[in-house]
Amino acid sequence: MKRAQLIAGLVLVALVVVTAVVSLFWTPFDPIRVVPGQRLLGPGWPHLLGTDGFGIDIASRLMVGARTVLAVGIISVGLAAVFGVPLGMLAGQTGGWVDEVVMRAGDVVYAFPALLLAILLASVFGASTVTAMVAIGVASIPAFARVARAGTLQVMASDFVLAARSSGTSRWGIARRHVLPNIAPVVGVQASVGFALAILAEAALSYLGLATPRPTPTWGNMLRDAQQFLFAAPLQALWPGLAIALAVLGFNLLGDGLRDYLDPRLREVP
Amino acid sequence: MNLALRVGRRLGVFVVSLLGASLLIFLVTHALPGDVAQVLLGTDATPEALAQLRAQLGLDRPLPVQYLEWIGGMLTGDFGHSHLNGQSVLALLAPRIAVTLWLVLFGLVGSLLIALPAGMVAALKRRSWPGFTISAAAQVGMAIPVFWGGILLVLVFSVWLRWLPANGYVPLLKNPGQWASHLVLPAITLAAVQAAVLIRYVRSAFLEVLDEDYYRTARSIGWTPMRALLRHGVRNAAISLVTVLGLQLSSVLVGAIVVESVFTLPGLGSLLLMSVDRRDLVVVQGTVMFLVLAVLLISALVDFSYLLIDPRQSSRRAATQGAGSR
Image 1: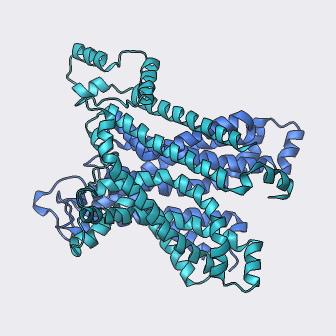
Image 2: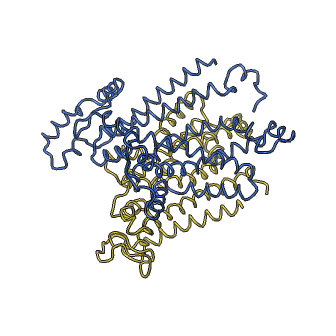
Image 3: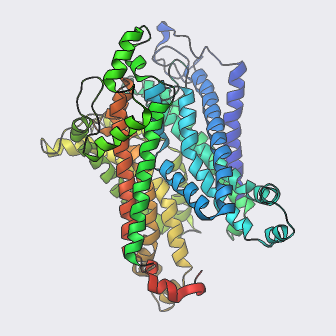
């Protein structure tokens, strides 16, 4: 059961990655160029999923959309991990007022969902893929810091850290040799779950016009376009949403599967 | 620590968070290399015109002065005035607050109505098909973006069945029936998506109860699982659920902003998006601050109620339990 989850997650994630890579070299049709004579075609041949309000092949746009999803996910999760994990480790290892300050600052950022940050950034710089990445990344820092801190506290209480400390290993040495390798798995799980959240956030932002603007296709802005033709071409509103849901499901299942795989205590007795 | 001290401490955290949040908003909108005057006048503006506008908007003064003035204004109820039409931010917010408030309220209540029973069943029947089905449905629900959920509901109930309006809003006092019919789909959208996330928490909160001695005792004296769970479980699970609800609040608010956009409801979310479009920085800044204030205030209130409700938080008990507890 749990194994099936992990495999299903891997398959879905691989599907997104393969689609994105293939789209770099080949798409069935041009994903950008407007074809006035072919607006709002239904699914069929050669346009498998039909065409949108600009006469552009929907399947091709979906493929290119996978690229944005991965790019935003990787950058924002990377950003969150690079800042969040060291901060969490620092808080967990030092304790005292440093811990208090880091976690309180985390709470403040936590009160700012990615959407509000993206709104602030977009009102100053204009909406773009980069503002979305930064907004999602910064908003995800507290989650990584929390996970890293909890893991660090656990490691610091262990006998091998006590032994290392009594033999004179420096704080930095303990962080590098003992803490980091031991919290890597939980950080990995957080990365997978964070990726799923980043996909949802990116989709919402580009749906609202706060991220990647037209004509670059993203799953979110495709849905924004499709909504105008809900009565004329309802099927159009199905595909991009389905793509988002499958990608998010994939990363969530992968995260859950990894968690259970890494932590035998969580394995349910069949 | 006695109760007054705890409340005081939490109050301090609230004030500091509020200051931190305002600083963050101010830094993003002022200190980062973006020029409001340039944005407003366009790229072909003359340097003189830019300088004049900056002076007019007070952008030529030192940043700390601008920040203090902004905060001072908010303390006296002045959230600033729109660059574009001079309207005060609060006057812009006021007529829209009700829309967002209804949506958040119905979203929260609706998600509880779905998640509590579903999560309880998922915990009780965790090794048979009802449990699996609910867990799987929650997993799928979590993957559905809130705006797509809304669009799907519109497809079914407005496009195909033609039962409910696809967008728009009518105030409650103007026509209660119309008001309700315009809020049904947005509220269901928000509630369903929130419920999917909530079900997991409810399930694990009740799973914990199933392991407790008092539950086993209740079962051994012949109570049915449902009765034991309802009598003992709900109260014990409630404590952890209150916390989760507090944390969920900001995601409900975000969901409401997105849902407003799907159904073109004239709430705070649509004001924000409109202001971003027009680059009306003062309105964006004031509205975001207002929303963050609401989130921080409510999470502080949740914590206060938590301090008062949960007997384990009171100092005497904590001292007597001491090292024996987990």
